[in-house]
Image 1 (cartoon, rainbow, N blue to C red):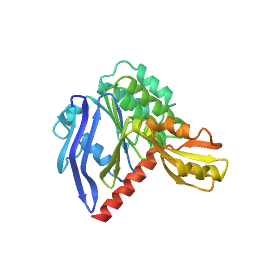
Image 2 (image 1 turned 90 degrees about the vertical axis):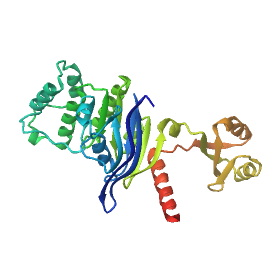
Image 3 (image 1 turned 180 degrees about the vertical axis):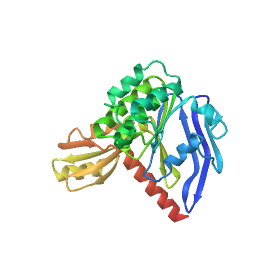
Image 4 (image 1 turned 135 degrees about the vertical axis):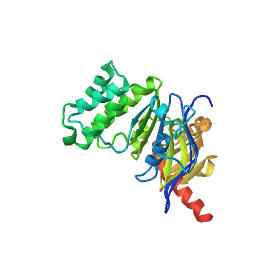
Length: 304
């Protein structure tokens, strides 16, 4: 497809003893925020380092804007802002010196957006680089990456070391970048932050993709589940005997009901003469989706 900005197909880097990434198939489309979620050590950084052309895959391909990541990495870097998972600074004294050096390298002459990011993240760039906390170093790396205002952002665990307030401020920056039409690929082991800003999410476990989900579909499923609590146990029993919906008892007075969105009116109509003390939709979180996909994968492996 023409709007595919980042693509991997069969991407494999095998370090032996089950370590590495295997048969990674990903597509990131123009203008979307694509999440890459998994536990620590699951293969997120290895995948991203292949995308950036820092390591060569054993087999498969990785491409950015149609360019081979390994062969054309220098060209790709002209279009990509990158926040690495491990921050290493050159031998400079202060954050200000580092940011000035980065600005010169990127050809940045308008510092308006850089100053906006500095203010939003409450960064003091005059601090000594060596004495900076993990969070301060992370903020400095984010500023250095975003100041170039490139159309593609690749962010490897970008909120590492940030406190909850600064994490939310960073997610605000991600939303700003999306509004500009920029394409963002962001990895994290924190499900909540991925769920907060991403359009689609690929889930990785033990070096393999176990599921890819649309956040819109997760938030607006075609099949909905409800907890219904009745005023009397007899009402619940009558509902169970007469209902056309899939239902399962929870306790004497409550049950869970499953129905398609097209059947919601019929469900509510069937309850109109019942004394309902509580009706609550069950929302599935990204973490629950991950655990479900993981358990399903374990079951399939057990049957092979």
